[in-house]
Length: 568
Figure 1 (tube, rainbow, N blue to C red):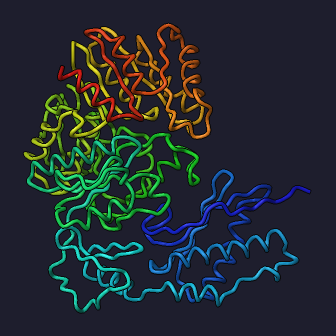
Figure 2 (cartoon, one colour; figure 1 turned 60 degrees about the vertical axis):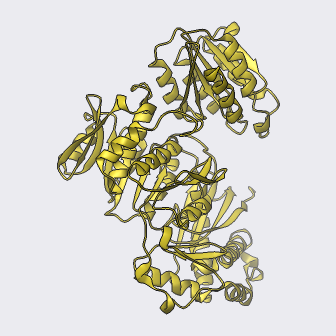
Figure 3 (spheres, rainbow, N blue to C red; figure 1 turned 180 degrees about the horizontal axis):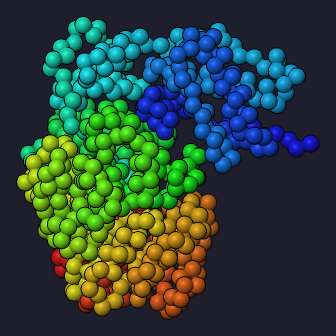
């Protein structure tokens, strides 16, 4: 007889809007074999409803999602008892397994209701819930975490320890305000978009708070370095007294692990969606990833602008099921999505005859010539034209005047100080070197298109990849590189990112696939690190050459080396 296998793989809190709803709650991930997943879900739903009713949580909701080899099982819960909610969900799972694996002995599988009630009581924080409801009633932004709760954003924000929340009647609600907040997500272009938007805000005289995978910043002050694209970074920026407008990079991982850290925003941008980081949290296909990226829409109402890429098939397809107010952006006025949307009275940003235009409320406005935006590299960097379009649409939504958008876009250069590791250009001795973080096929395609559009005597690409990517994804990077018909390929090891691979295993895959695609072996150089690879690239380079340096590690050292070349 085939053995049924059921296993609890993961249990965690969802502290904000998530893949399933705009409500907080608890999620478990389970794996299964040799059983119909629908049977598992049906039994879990039965058991969890019995538990929720017994605990006085009859109004809480449940959701489930079946994917290849696994199931996500979710319950909603009050924000003050999310740890206890995970215990409730796990208890329901134990009952479910008892019913499925040993139905004749199911009475022996029991749950200590009094213990669960005690956990809920110990964690319960009624003043926190009262504050949350009062904020909603006053239409004021509310944030909470394990340590603090806050109302309002920016200079009017008031922050309270969760165990010392004052009576809501003592709060002067008239002095609390919510600043404009944008959430930016997508596979590629997120960091550039928030930084470019902050330059526009600065041109308008506003101190922009931004979060990104490199740092967290208010105005010109970097508060800390590191990956702040999750909920913690968002809360820090929105609670900072100097933040007047916020552009928050929102990463896929944080949304799937905990949900969005912000439940009230002004607008949302989705730059694009491609296959990257598949296989995590049940996100196994491109369609799954599209749905994950669109979690951010939970932070806005149906009447607020959802800004989407009309040149991205995933965005266009998913948007057909939405009722949101959409503003589309595209490389071309002739994009059929743009044409149909404008005809229907919708808003859009697009390029026509080399100029970015905005169309809103039936009025078309010329914003700026693409060639006047430095990061487009005279229109060679088509992906940065996309980013500029997204920023144009976003900043108009946020109430910034066209003249300041023009000023901000035209003043933002491709230099490390503005946008470290994203299309940084270094010119010396007739050589052009571009440093970028492209780490997936979609991002590399954009950079390959960029260098292909640039005049060059010869072209070199420095490439590497982390060991946790599949062989097929690694080969996809090689295939993207070959589109540029490079005259040389520098293949680097990432010793600190082996992630289960043997030393030099990934470089061997890259080299062999390049050979299989027709690259001559004498044109392929191997290197122990990206920095050493750049040194080899510089030894190879001559006047007229273009070097694409994909700096996945040692970025700062590489930038310093190239800066020295520029200044020598």
